[in-house]
Image 1: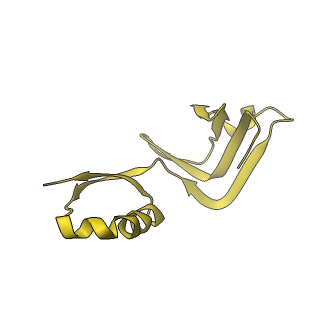
Image 2: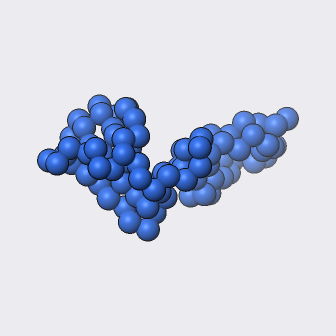
Length: 94
């Protein structure tokens, strides 16, 4: 885990509400995303984590999932499978 209070994360692209952007980075300060500055605006001596060949995306939510009472025993396993696919939040559909 990064212990620095402020750093930048770069990748080949960042997925935003406007689509893929290859000229931006994530600026993280005290564990909070502060913004998406252009890569050329990163301070020269800043801590930069660079992930070439990767795309940074927000977490994904599954809004159509059904859990049955007998599936609760397998919840940890199901959660692990969902997380490995990038799904961090689910909503039970009834």
